[in-house]
Structure formats: C-alpha cells, structure tokens
Image: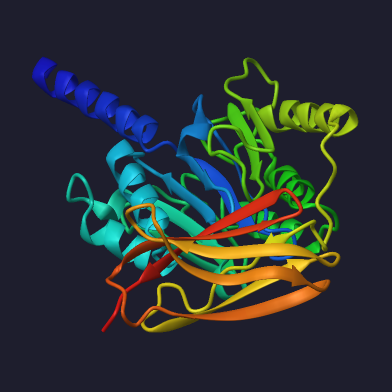
Length: 333
C-alpha cells in the first residue's frame, strides 16, 4: 500500500513538472506591411515568457513555445537569417527537433516577404487546450488554455483594432485576458507578459519598443501592468511613429529565396540621391542596382544573379542619410 501511495505521489509530481515545463502560453507575432515593423506579444502563467520571442527587424518574427528549447529557437533564428519562408522554417524545425520530439512543440512564424507570410505548428502532444490561428500578416497560438476562445479573441482584436502595430498587439493581449486564460492561473490570465516591436534597421538587442513584465504576484494581472507600461511609453516616447509612407522603405524582394533573378522595390517620399547595392557572402560589393537621383514614389529594379554562386546576399539601400538592408537568398538551379 505504501509503495502504491509513493508511486501515485511520484506520478502526480511528475505530471506537475511536465505541465510546468510545457510553458503554457498565448502569443501573437505579426508584421506591418506598410511600415515594415515586426512585432511580438504574449503571456504565460510562468515567469519570463519573453524568452520565446525572437524578433528580426525588417524581416519577421519567430515564436518557439511549449516545452521551450533554446536549441530549437537558435535553429529557427538561423533559418530566418538565411531567408527561409515561415512554412519552411517550421517544416525544418519539426524534422530536426533538438530532442527528436516535435509533437510537444508549438511554433508561430511571420515575415514581410511577398505581402506577408505566416505559418504555425501545434504538436499533437501539446497540452489541451492547444491550437493556432493564422492570417497573411500574423500568427496567434496557445497551449494549456481555457479554450479556443482565447486565441480567437486575440485574432479578432488584432484584425479589428486601428492604430500602430504595437496598438494592435496590445489590444490582442487585452482581448485574451481573463482568469485561467492559461489554466494554471486561477485568479488572473497569466504571470508574465511582453510586447516588442522592431523597425527596419533596429539592432536585434535594441528594438524600438521592448516591454517586459517578467513576473507578478497575487492577483495582479501582467497584461494590465504591461498596458500601463505601454501607455507610459507612448506618452513619453520621443520617437516619431512610422506612417504608411516612411522616410525610405526597402520592400521585401520577390521572390526570395530566388533562382536567377528577383524584383526589388523601394519607396522614396521625395526626390533624393539613391544607392542600391548588393553585398556578397564575403562582404564584397558585387552589384550596384541603382545610383543617382530618383523621383519620389515606388521604384522597381530587377537583379539577375545567374552567374553568382548560391548564398545569402545583403541588399543595401542608402538615401538621405538613411540605410535600409534586407537579406537575399540565391539558390541557383
């Protein structure tokens, strides 16, 4: 009898550890095609949920959650840096899981390419309720949730809210907020929450907006604390908002990755001198695609790389003291 009781207690304890390690979370990653901003927001009933967020300014966002594994996150980061599409990133993550157990993982990935791309994955062994919803410019996902309404309400708030990308991400978190949104929190939605937005040209470690509520006690809801931080940030920030017509905007090349040639588009708010060049994987300039004065408006350039080897190339646009960069992945047939 004692052995049976001991075994029962051990099994129960292990089940609690499993739920804890699963890192239940509701989160959203998204991009703004007009401004080039990329953003990330989420909350969890464990502290430090910001760890799942990987923001790539000017490119996209990766969320790695449910039994978070740093090796998987680093692998996903490498794939995004190499120009892989969201669906391809997830396929490769599933195929090359660091522990050979992709069924316990959950991912959301978005980028700015081709008018916005998104993909998500919820492993069959994630803890219920689990699931995801995607749109052209966003992915919202969660596990160990009260029900599908948590991410459903997040999606509805994100797509219906006017304002900046940060405004819409914050609204999505507020829409998810309810007691037991993450079912391990009985009197509030979560313990930790975060909100992050990167602009083209931001260093990955110095984003335009990077707010984190790492832990809360008692009945204090981290989403409310985060809302207060965001309101204060908006009231005191001296960084101007990006409008639909940013100063200089380098659009996502299409196609990318590409074989042979790809189209590159850039926008100028006024007539200005422009240099558009390509840097090869060794850091050498291998092509100048535009040089000289260009009128205000959208410009299109086709780059043919038929004679160049495969690799990750850097596209660099300089105009009016502003520099914009994007990665190009050349995969010749």
